[in-house]
Amino acid sequence: MKWSDLDFANNETRIMKTTYNPNNNMSNYELTPPKTEGSVRTINMEKEIHMSPRK
Image 1 (spheres, helix red, strand yellow):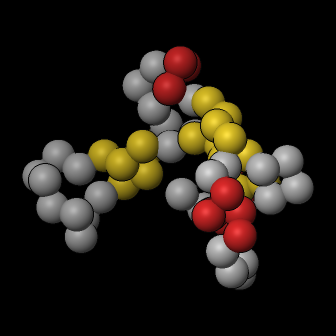
Image 2: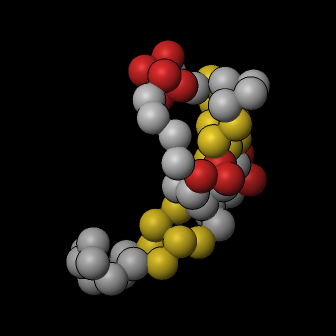
């Protein structure tokens, strides 16, 4: 997730990427588009996230 995926004005989070990790090694991964169009979505941001410090 990147800062650009967080919309504090509208209290939303955009899910637009997934991690690709063929060797199950979290220090070596790629951010790729999700496999299905249904995986790209916008969800409401939790109150705790919205209230946390911003960049």
